[in-house]
Length: 96
Image 1 (cartoon, rainbow, N blue to C red):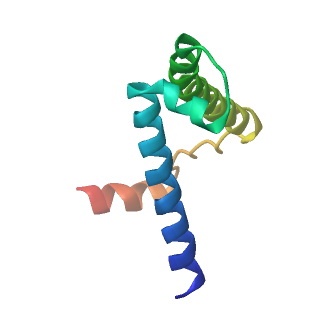
Image 2: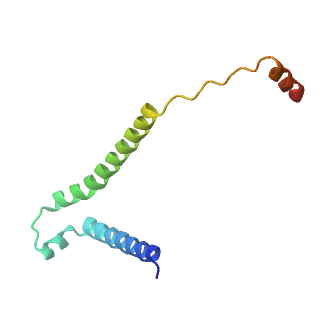
Image 3: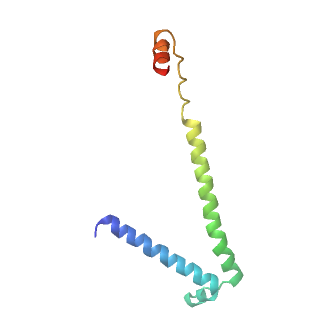
């Protein structure tokens, strides 16, 4: 397998594993006690919801900051010159 396929397969497997773990924890949060963590079910469910929301919110803010930075640092376009003299007559001939 080439490098791109290995990375793709790894990303796929990681996403499926996280999705299954997320759903399992939403349905049965006490499975975390098997690992040895003692956390209240309400806290687990809260953080399961809050973490993706926080990541999404930060992503939207980063995109907004990037757009603002791009707008602030990009020079304005040069104004379009009006056609004058012979070039204007040539343009009228091609239009009409």
